[in-house]
Image (cartoon, rainbow, N blue to C red; front, side, top):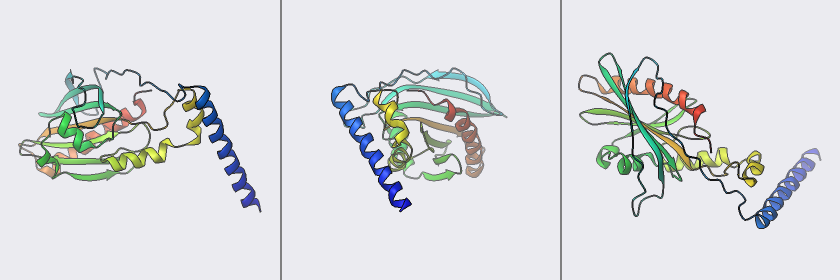
Amino acid sequence: MAKIQYRNNFLAFTCIGFCLATVYSLIQPTVGSRQVSSFSFPSTVPLKSWQLVKTESISNRQPEKNKQKELIASGKSYLYSKDNLSLKVEMLYLVGTRANVHSVLENKIAIPAKLLKKADTHKLEDIGFYTIFSDKNRAYLSSCINPRGSTTVTQKQFSQNRYKHDLKYSLLLPWLFGQETIRDRRCLLTNLSIPVENLQPEIAYKILQEAWQDWYLWWQPRFPSL
């Protein structure tokens, strides 16, 4: 009986909440509207055991025709050095994205599609998914840092992440008053790369993975606010 009563109360609460949201949306046309605030990447980002050499802005580009309607709200590249080795980190703040990392790399950073077809996807505990690939000159590690939940590589992973972490009752009232968004389709696409002339691929990937973990731990709590 207690379980039945609990279920009935839960259903009643859900129904009332849905009805209130519906009524409020009818009388307030701007309900749930939330403009994404502008964001500029910092000029310096600390990275454990690496020395920052320089930073450069990545120009904002409107989405191409027949491509995904995502927008690069801002972007910046960071160049680091350590023990005669250079590390480049490219950051893109994507808004309205489906977060298909390979597609963004191909269309926005000009990574060849034939190279991306050889990429492997891996998962780090407590962080999420990332993809690695290389050519004869450089090794790469790429992923999307999400506003909520783990990092993702594919559109499916991103959508699953959104369903798991965005569709919560705690976001209902903030959404009604335009303080939050129910489906937060933003991500910080991160593309790390190092030269591989004198490195075995396994060593290069290990270096990238260690840098990625430190990079993620710095950025995750600093994800741009709405």
